[in-house]
Length: 189
Image (tube, rainbow, N blue to C red; front, side, top):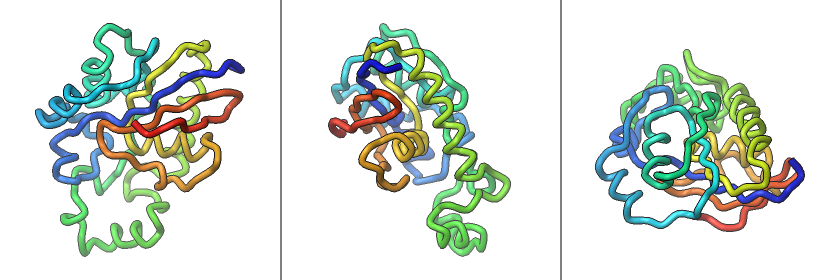
């Protein structure tokens, strides 16, 4: 795809796990009422195509924001598998040796019994390229997870920044332009 394409990257709305500040990756939580209300209270960029992770929280977010646009599901856009940390908050993990080692690594160690950072990023970027190849110059919204956005932008956004520099709150993201394998961030949304 060589045409300039507008892509908005949106992190899904809040879930109960997000309210608890828990690591929610493979857990298929729906949006909580606060998350639904936040989505309904905001305006979002229009899109001709909606691309989503298969997780309930992303699909529900996409349906609320883009009710009349068919959603294309890409399994590999799902969030990282947090392994033993799944469903736990940083308070619950305080004092855990594996968690401390992960923190000390800057979040780069594999999650115990979960997914390695490199594997997660590679999976997300491969899925992004597949989805981007089907956009054909139309405007698109990618309703995904915070980690997914961070992985894709770390690889393709210019100028380059660190993975964690792209972290966004729930229901927030980036309006971008994509062309020839590079993403240019226009503004935060």
